[in-house]
Image (cartoon, rainbow, N blue to C red; front, side, top):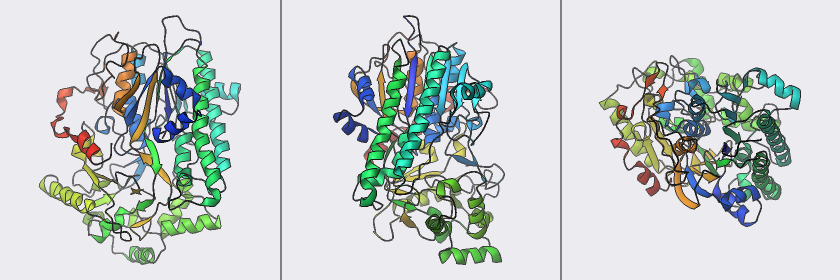
Length: 559
């Protein structure tokens, strides 16, 4: 790319799921030369993720600079307003403007490639290529629309969608081949676009590290319950290769610029070991919070469920016999496997919602009160009854123990009021409960998966941790060395600051003052969010109740 001498584009690169826990030892071994290249004249910080540390929430917060109460994304899926069915989130559900929108309105050309939750692509001042999750074989994944045909015509294979996060033992090399293919395709597309025109802001996310971490973490630690010495050496090699592939991609991208860009390298969350899955709807049922219908079919399903005919055992058997796709494929929308399991096993279709007070849904087992006036068949009154119920649940969750090991499983229980603020805060979960070591995870794996409370984690051996990475380097960036802790909410204000745009009033993050060039033109840019286009000002929300939350999270070992 050829730029005028005073034009310094900003390149924001995401390594989904990367952690300094892995990067630092690899740097000492000289295995990540391009990350080292940034650190030589730049700086770094631990980037704290969203709560829970889940990609659709975190990347949306990175892009918008606001919490889910303002942008409206809480997981991969959300409850339909008039039922207890769930629909995947898409870009149309995001209700706060992203940094690429604000830059575009200021006349900046933007290039957004493979950022999660950008399908369908948005109209931007530039180009957008949708990221995970996008429907397979979709033909409307680019903006402008004809760009998809142009890329196919000039580059051939342009698929860079996130590879499967689950591989069977012995298939590790196949995962590496897929990571190499999709990463190479993404770089080819980016280099093509960068030659095609000049951009002021480029944002792209590489998925490979997260995919490898979910499947292969068990190979790093002999004490992991799923560790298998037979495949450990191969698994470790492929795992570390995922970081080397990402580093190589970073280098190829940096070398595409004639003028040195401002570079921000970050991850939406870290990764680490996960040992156990917890099925919290079983616990809710045992305590009378969740009730089932009394018809013959449901009674029969409950009997079968208690005797082992459930999703967890069915998919273990199907995987062993190779007669059904794995769990990840079963999660796909309109999955035949999912329909079969719901037909023969206990599911939310068997719940008696009029008698149910609480249910768990989401990739971290988030709790939702069946609230009258919000849920279609709500059973709990807002106000005192709601407060009493959530306080009771908090105490009971903090005392919940692993039946086999006797230890408490969750030491962090946070309410909606503590975590979320904004016009869409009521759409979020009422309680989130976490193990600060993240060894226990109330993973979804269907809402009623097994008759056990705790099993070995049904899907992953590694899962998300809150500690992501942040590295910045460039002609307009003055970060040097280790700078402590930053938040995902700080990224958008920092990008805007580099472009000379003051942080909009609605954003909750802070430009990393003193760490970027001080030549920032201060101007107010209130941002309208929501269908009504209402401008959200700071005084719309009372932040006093959230004071001290960061310190509380740190005291509990979560930060």
